[in-house]
Image (cartoon, rainbow, N blue to C red):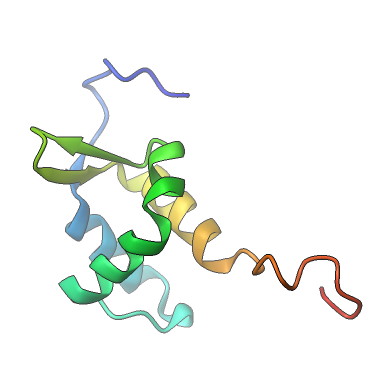
Length: 91
């Protein structure tokens, strides 16, 4: 895990990280709206926190570390669904 006290890393507001991610990955067909970001957070917030890609600043605003956000979001969105794992014919 990364040092939580390292203030030399770049942190942006999470919606900006989301917008940058969506722009870099048009193949995923995602929207860059706040609604799309909230839907993503509902499903993948735990994975993003575990990867230290997101933090809650001042108990109010989500901030993201862009490099970790990109890796964690891509992994969360492209991982095979649990029901597909172990089935014949699955990649």
